[in-house]
Image 1 (cartoon, rainbow, N blue to C red):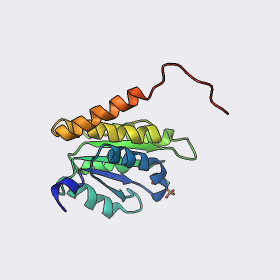
Image 2: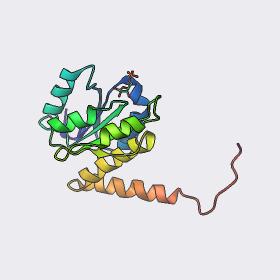
Image 3: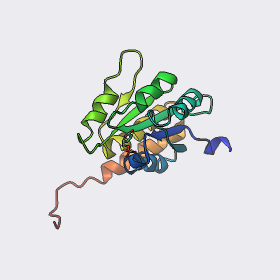
Image 4: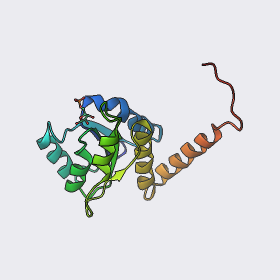
Length: 167
Ligand code: RP5
């Protein structure tokens, strides 16, 4: 694998069922031309996989980890406990509590082990990708240019006035 295609962002999620949310992080990174990998890593069902992933993340060349989980969402915090890389936690919307359980599980970290927690669901997944881009842009001019262009396109896409939509 050459340097350009080596993943710099790791997107991990607790279950296949989280992919519907986390695919928006992947799509946003792809839009920005940022290389990433995706893995299912469960803090509860595959703890050994989690330890292996988190403890080798930096040495494998990752710069940022985006971790999504729902319910008793321990994946982002446990990942952050085992890597010095920035970890952004995405609370996945749960059936029982609409993601409030996920949000509180992820956001309320003890001092010393930070997880940058974003909004519940799709918006959070997109924003975790954009925050990752902001971090990478500090040292990578190509990412900075791509992020500036992405934001300009978003601004241009906002209409001046609302229109009636068919319902
Ligand atoms: C969490 O439990 C996962 O992150 C997922 O959001 C939730 C439900 O998982 P499944 O039962 O759908 O596999 O660990």
